[in-house]
Length: 330
Ligand SMILES: [Mn+2]
Image (cartoon, rainbow, N blue to C red; front, side, top):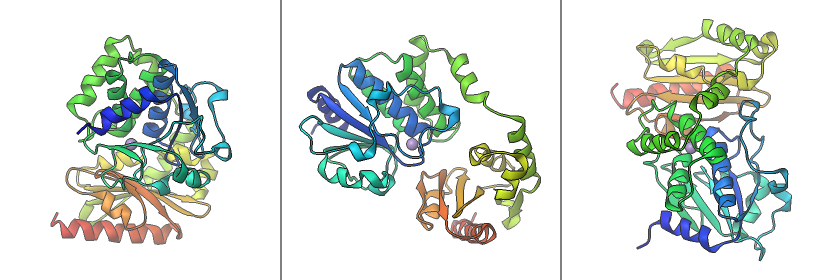
């Protein structure tokens, strides 16, 4: 039987016009793979239109190239089945609820090509290439480019690289596979400017952000004999340091680095509840913990939202993590 990967490549060859989207609150993988696939399709002379998942690309990724403004479509403008649209790519989405509300109806009428690496993917597409063994969807787009003989250069390579480093923590998480590194090598061989891109990625901070980090880090705490580490930010901290929620990202990795910590938890107070992230080492599956709060993700990195005050959300999460660690006799 033909593999889904081959069938996706065939669908690209046979079609002329495609729509693309990814999960809401898009991360580096969602955005990077969207940019990469846009350029892959354009490289083949196909028509590609992007429906940007809300709230759009954060400022730190403003350099990403998604093609021209004319290739952007508002969700209301999507009409399927339209004779002019051959298929609708949905990237990095484990289930259809992760697609923005305004597109839900279109999902029923379009031919959905689902490219994803979430282990709990519900196979909601008409054609599903789901490979939990892949580090990122960006890696899968790179494989597709190799299959289709498209060079891993320019905005395509930038998108792939961003997607891979985002989901692997710069090639350090256990999902970093030999193929991830081989594809990265191919990108470098094609003349990729690593220094310039890493500068764009890593030279993004501000003094305010550093102050926020200092404040949050000085209040970080441990539970369960140090096995659970928690870092949190309430709205007052953002106001005091004149920062935005975006500035709170990545802090969780410092907590994950504490010697005794098996699971790191970060909580960020928002207007209508709390956004949380979980990071773990090795066999501790934080996806299943996030799922208890209707969240999702991967074994070592997951997250979601809790509609509760910050203290309550922290208490609930710590309790859930503690139960999981005790179940595993860790
Ligand atoms: Mn991903």
